[in-house]
Length: 147
Image (cartoon, rainbow, N blue to C red; front, side, top):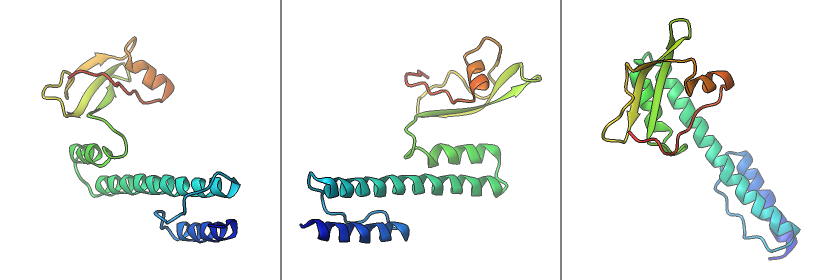
């Protein structure tokens, strides 16, 4: 396929993406500048599709939360809705109590047959591994958690 034909097809693909259709047919690029542009456009389409799917899922969770459901219902929905976006097999939700000195597990869900930290478990926050989460605002991901 000549460069002019590829550029015309890439322009058509961008118009389709602007209209919200991200799975567009983009001819495989040759190893030249125009071909790399085509490869980048194809990757952009895949990235936009993933991002819009993530936004759709966030919208669904927001709808559930705004529907007046109980916290456990909302958290169960979060657990189910984001598994395709973020791979996990356990999520826990804890709250700070006693003016931020104690953290208490409120809800947890896991694919494990037995969980060691369940709703009601509490621990002093100071000196705990959870203190870093509070200090940095960054989530904690444990890739080798057992139970």
